Image 1 (cartoon, rainbow over the protein chains, first blue to last red):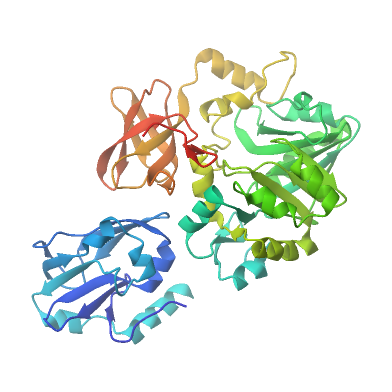
Image 2 (image 1 turned 135 degrees about the vertical axis):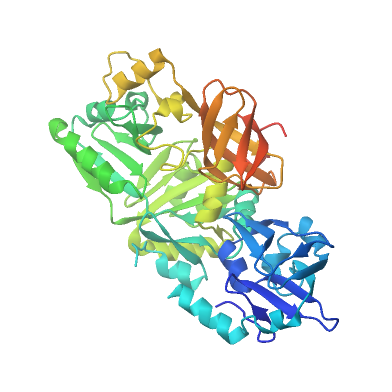
Length: 131
Length: 363
């Protein structure tokens, strides 16, 4: 079973999002996603300053098995991306909700975050996917 | 639910991620595929290959039968236990399967064929066996475990019955030895030293557990694929099939043209292809960009033509992407591959990429 932290929000496409105290949103891929992809070998994350739209493919994670687009959960400006992934893409496998984060976005509209799936709804989506 | 090997419950209990492979529920990894890969290159790993089909062929004319059916020539096998890698072809030269055949004695050969092709292989063997009065017996009572890596033989030997262990340790590469219902061969699909061990199905789980206790790492199909690709070994169904000949698949070396009067199935078509010029070849590719080659990506050879990646992956040993591709015969040392909408430059090399733990190509 994969780990779905209760305090995070999710997309059906297996991204997670966390609202930080400073109002930015940290984004990564879920434990389920990293398990399904297998060992990650590359991660391409957007540079700080880039504008992204909700639902836009703005990062790519590639495993031994497959390449997968990562969609932004919110519209806004990228304020940081995880530089450690360049040398250690396996951080995504080892710690998908921590050191394996992909990017941080300053959202244009906080309401977009509130409208994301909560843990329960994401778990239901996972269950529907596997049955 | 798919077919299950005798080790299915063992894999599930070990937390393996199970996937469908040619109709079989098989472990793709037990955690990290890359760690399993390095385990084989640096120490010892094991694979459940019980889904592959062992077939015993027996009869007074079994040698004649196989000299007709296989593109390689079993007459090369004069010592008991010696193995031969060969393609089995249709009349038009397309590859029905690639296989290993062991010469046991003048009336008995043992063949190992791929899991996904077993039904058509058996059908083809049986359709031709009658004329030679050869019996075709799939050994469903046998499981098979491959132990691979520089320390694999040494670790596994302590767990074999002593007389079998001593004979097994004396085996040269590509030889096998039988003992009652066990069979040990110094063969594999990783580019490392090791054994492929056949045993009665009811002894497989116990043996697997003892190997694990001896420090042999369980490996799934994921690592099996990256290891075989680094070793430059073809995968049936990806790198060759019935629409391609061995000449177009990097397997020209497995065709025994001499003696010229040996009339194997497919010979005429291969000879015609050779005379007319083989238009495509299978080559190795190495990518320097941070991207991964995948099967079916388009290959562009400027001013010459186009081809296709047949297998691609990330090589844990080279830490970059490698692949096999079928390209026009005139292709030299560079090409471009279309990956996710971009054209990336790739070096064309001659496999293997890695052999016995060492990088075997210029980087």
